[in-house]
Length: 354
Image (cartoon, rainbow, N blue to C red; front, side):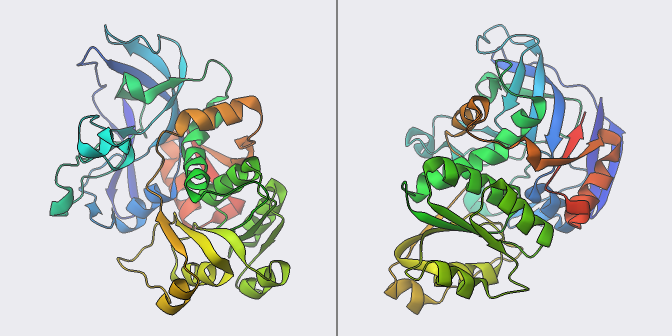
């Protein structure tokens, strides 16, 4: 089968790999149809690592995908051959203390599509797993969720990042009528916006350093959006919300957006940390967050939210298909990564059709 493989920094090669086969009766062989290029994939492409997760070349990335079922193991009952499915990229063990607590997203033995094993000793139970930027993969039955023909292949692939937005807003405790700010208007920030509006947020304020994303956020439902390089966004939001917002979602992974989030939150507000920083440490104005009694919540991917995200999209409550702005073939994977890495041509989500 064909695969788009990382072979070095900013290097992707199309290579032939053995087609995987079913080895366990509970496994499913999937024919990949769509793969979204995620910001974390681009981190591996540009830097070769995210924190302690370091790429060893050659490496196959990709985790946002939709597929059709090619074959199933003898014990599989959830899906059948020919079904179109959303692929849940996290493979948890189901037996460790975290899984028993309902925290499969922080499973001690977690495997995740297109994610290298952590090098840090504290995560030594976690394993690396090849990604889905190829023609076929094998996944456990529990990771294959049928669309029941209610979603397009694009929507099905986009449900993975959208589920992170759903999980973020759920954990934030945002209530109907409350106000939110989202710092960073890429696919995850936009997913948080859609989820917040569904939750009943009265207003959602957004920021981004790319003008086209500012406009995209407005078209997607933001009450207000601005570029921090062109105006004081803290002052702008304060003018609209003198008491501060209830929830701030930091989706850019930047020190300046963390600082802005602290300033625009009301006392007792909640700061959601979703963005992936390019550096190992961040800082906070401790006097500000202490006196405001701000709650900090980290988001680690999504947990028990993929099917909920799918239902929201299938019902029409969540409109996300327009996030897929650019299309590429598998052979054009490097072009897709370069486009996303350079924020070129108004890209929101580059979708690879396999």
